Figure 1 (cartoon, helix red, strand yellow):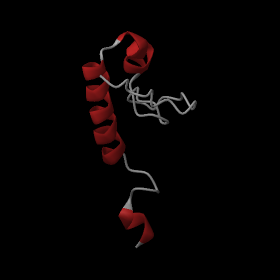
Figure 2 (cartoon, rainbow, N blue to C red):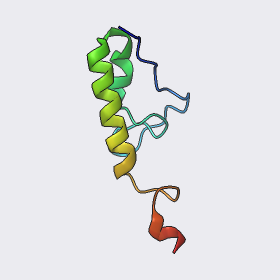
Figure 3 (tube, rainbow, N blue to C red):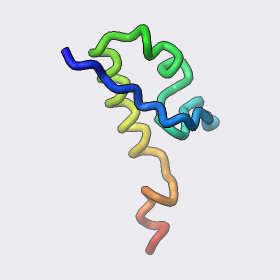
Length: 66
């Protein structure tokens, strides 16, 4: 099975909800990454996409530009 690439972009700053503003993982998800199975990593990446899409920023808030 193909190895899942670590999504870390070397930002490692956490918001008030404990989610990294760089890769959208929680501190626990990031810390445990090397110990997780491919399936667990894939699930975390799915969750990071959900988090990324649910967090309002200037770059993903379309109303900001209207």
